[in-house]
Structure formats: C-alpha cells, structure tokens
Image 1 (cartoon, helix red, strand yellow):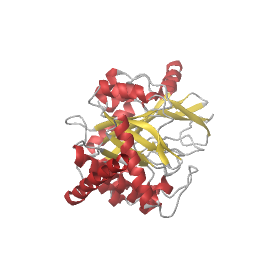
Image 2 (tube, one colour; image 1 turned 90 degrees about the vertical axis):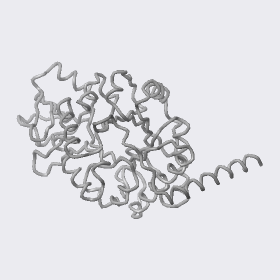
Image 3 (cartoon, helix red, strand yellow; image 1 turned 180 degrees about the vertical axis):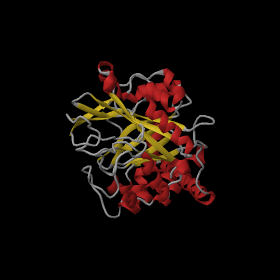
Image 4 (tube, helix red, strand yellow; image 1 turned 60 degrees about the vertical axis):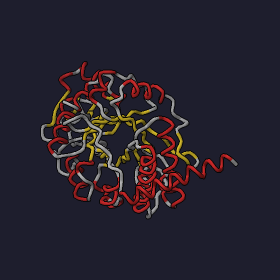
Length: 364
C-alpha cells in the first residue's frame, strides 16, 4: 500500500511539473560546448574494447554511449558490458557530457512503441529512468529509420507523425523532471544524412523539439563502386556529399545551429584492379577501423591519395581501395562547421582510433 501511495505522489509531482513546463514553454538546453568554439562529440560502442585516453577529454564535449535496445518492448541496457569504464572516465573528466543512445541499425521496437500514447509515455519514462540510473545527462534517439524496414525492423506509414509524437513525449518527460530538480537534460537524435529520408520526417516540428540533430554524413558510398563514403563535397556526378546533406536538411526545416556534422573513424573497403579506381566498379569487402588503416599506410605510404574537390582521402595499393576520414579531412569538416554556423562535429566511433589523432583534429 505504501508503494502505491509513493508512486502516486511521485506521479502527481511529475504531472504538476509537466503542467508548469507546458505553460512556461520548453526548457532551453545550453549548447554545452567549449567557449568560443563548436561542439565536439564521439560515440562510444559498448561492443568495443576501448582505451580511454585522458588527453582526449580536452577535445571532446559529449560522449554518446551506445546502444540501449528494445527487449520485449522495453528499453534495456542489460547487455552492456563495459559501461563502468565509461562512467569512470566521465567522472574523472567532469567537463564531458555523458549521453546514452538507444537504437542503432537493426534495432527494432521504435515503430511499435511510437504507435500509441501509452507506448510513447512508457518509452519516455524508461529513457528517464536509464538516465537517472547511470548518470547520463541526455538521450540520443537513433531510430534507423522511421517508415523503413530496410534494416529488418517493423515500420508503418504512420511512423512519420508517430516519430514526432515520440520525441515530444520524451521532451515533456525530460522537461518535467528538470522542472523538479533543476538539472538540464539534452534530447538528441541521430538521423540519416541522405536527403531521401526527409519525406519520412516532420523536420520543422522535430527541429523545434530536440536540442541536437546528429546528421550521419558517412556511409554515403555506392555499394558496387569504389567511392567516398564521407566526402565533404561532391567530386563526381551523382555522388552524395556532407555539404549536400546539410543544405537539404536545413531547407527542410532543421535549424543549422542544431545540426552536428558526422565524421568517420573507420573506412569502407573494396577490391579492384582498376588503374584509376575512384568511382569505378569494384567489389565491396568490409569496414575497418582507422587504426587498421594506419597500419596499411605505414607499410605502403605511397598508396595514400587525397581528393581535393571532395576533401576526402582514399587508399589504393593496386588491389584494395579504402575510403575513410583522416586528420586533414576532419579538420576541413571542423572548419566547415564553424563557417556555416552548425552546432558542431561528431564521430562514429571513438574506439576505432587508438592514436587519438582524429579526436585532436576535431578541435584544431
């Protein structure tokens, strides 16, 4: 009986706080970036064995711990194995903002949860509980993608509207708790860089709800073509570029000052024997981390090329073609962020560069 009364009291307090928030308007979330500069962020994947470097903390504003998943319809982190190391690092470097990501490629459950008001409220409550339990200061919703079953997940024609409603439910839950304790909480989303996804999103409404939009401007390659997967600019007819993605989403209604440009700490690899392989037919092989790419470069430094138009490097040794980001291309992206008034630059994934070189390039 006491437990029921305790829950009822907490529910009443939350509802009063929510009414206050609805009347006063959304809580304004500070950008949480270094003074005078753009925000920087990296994703940390629980499945990677990561060495956290103390010297990197000065170049990072946010760290996204990924991924929470849906298990039997509920948000779950029971599969996490290395979150304690992450927590220790964040506690050692209090300037970092810890955020957890829910979803990822192939993560099912979003369409089902977003379809009803009960499902949306339950999701928002479980997000808040996870934040409070693990000390996260924000959440990143990574639904890949509303209205699409390409990743083997459920989808619905109503996903477009329901996604907005889901985000609004999370926004209200976070703001209600903030009204109670005064602790700001950040709502982020990760979305495909491809403009083809825009019709599946209510961009204007989303832009008014969330604090931050991580635009995944990587994996933009063509499967059967040796091509750039994270080019800043287009250097070939029909190629997709980060610049084109940014322009498209801003035109669709996402504010520039909420957009985070994506960079890759990994490469995409093809096999080919074409003398000039860039944008020629090739057989796709796999991905590999930047640390592995550096080992290849050390053996064959002459195999490194740079596309000045695309502002993107590539490796070609006569057999293997690899598209990736390096220190120079990431520095160019950081400059682009500043020149175009974007919120900042983020990267997938921290553990893929054991040298810290790429993190350092994010904040030149």
